Length: 408
Image 1 (spheres, rainbow, N blue to C red):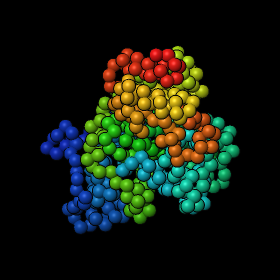
Image 2: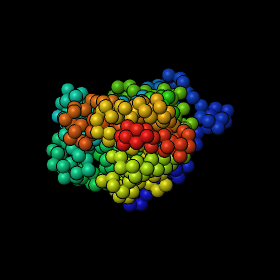
Image 3: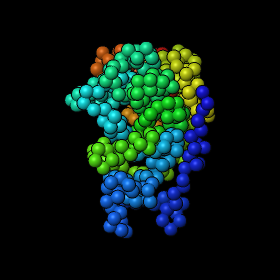
Image 4: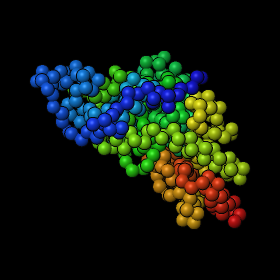
């Protein structure tokens, strides 16, 4: 499949200059905006005027000039007609699902997804009479078997959290579109690496908190899709983002805008280190999972669907067998080797390590964790890029030898 070039697409996005010609866009902190003619305001409320129709702004819960700039950049990067930014990744996911689904509708979702998303589907949405069937998203026949007349959404992560299963987005899109079902893809683990919209997805959601921001200092999300869907989300009367109000602060939007230009550099380095570390661990006979290893079940699919030049990310997992062993390795890596930090999240410039079953996937029942292949001793390692790679590999090797192989 012909790869997409998101860096080239970003160059085509309209450049926004700041007030007085500043090279950085201005931060517009106003909560409300004036109009020059009384007749303009009713047109805004009627949806006839907006940021793209004469640069009209009403209220920052609706649209904000600084947030709008970030939205345009994200849409360019993702190959979508439009985008809208939100206060968190979970708000982006929740509003997207609630915009598509009504009471009585059904979702087919990957069983290998972030614990918070799993809880949304399993515990909260049923209170609204929206049901979900969880499946192995790499098993297309299982996906088809789970679909019903009420199915409105197939939901997956491009790279599953934390199992790192790779979704076959073109095949899922074909399956969904044959039945007029929307394919919603969370691409948080793999910006630039994969471009789900180009591969066939209808809606792409993000936690911008992670790689796209890259500094673990703010919370944010985004929805990228066709212009009509973004307009639906922001409709003054029925738009889920407009009415539920997960508004992104313009200062947050500005910070993320300043970090997007070096996102390609960061992703390449995360991936370079991920590949090198995974290969070393494989040679040590450690149970390591990484999409860049030929042993990964979807290795060839990942290479086929990925954009050239970005690698396959900076996240790998080590199966330590038991939670006790996983916690021992985390303790050694952080407190003896100074290799990263025991913390959730990913995309930071330093390495973040967590035991998924007891942290970011803890909302998922133990039996469901087992079904999806999540060992209680699975460590998710989100590699950073501080320090030289050679030193980091030595630190990892010493820690693994001490805890998992008994060699010091």
